[in-house]
Length: 296
Image 1 (tube, rainbow, N blue to C red):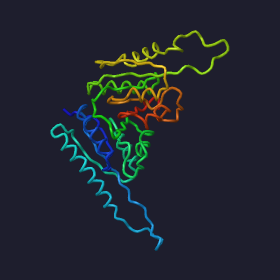
Image 2 (cartoon, rainbow, N blue to C red; image 1 turned 30 degrees about the horizontal axis):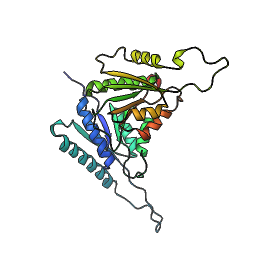
Image 3 (cartoon, helix red, strand yellow; image 1 turned 30 degrees about the vertical axis):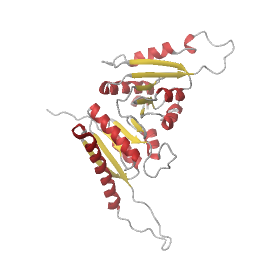
Image 4 (cartoon, rainbow, N blue to C red; image 1 turned 120 degrees about the vertical axis):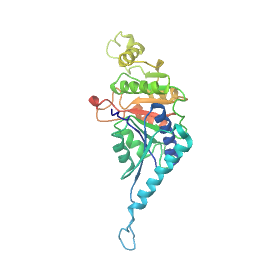
């Protein structure tokens, strides 16, 4: 009887410290959820021109492909050294072309895509590298962005930014599935601000315009109505700017999970303004969950 293997967790590797942290996080997560790990390294032949001859000198592409393969071997060896018998099943792959494109291609058959905040070649002052940013805007599967000071999986709870939108509902369902495997508690967080200005005659007498707690609690219950074996879940509704509150609430937690679009986003944009802010300031690994296919 044939059994299908779980889809792998794909992680980008390039030999940088940021990449090493992402690999460690991805390996621990893979073991906890029972998934294989695929390490992907991309390589490109640099384009150089000799001003003396106005010609492009030949550079053997196999040199760069070999370097990428060595980066993968080194990363796999480090995982094995760190985790021993607990290391997940691992495969490695190299690809010619831009790193973001290689990772997004590999993610088509993955359960999760993991990247670091900066790779080689990034400015020291930049929080996010171009690869992380590109993946965040185009990922076909949940994306985890792991910062340099990120805790290991399972260290703390899971904070989910929730506003009742399809993207937020998808984020909450993903967080519940991960919490089942990792044993984490879930903190559903919603921040709100009062409407600016009042129509003629004042605001309607609807208390949920002033305190959306009942509406958020109903939306959470509806989202999880068909989910079995729910982990411990608490709902936090506060009057505050959304991004600022989520950043504060996520300090010391294992994950911050958001949908790629909330209410008010343009349909053509994968990331909303809150997600954009969290990309640069999340204090723990940030998970961006793309919208369901019928909402894409």
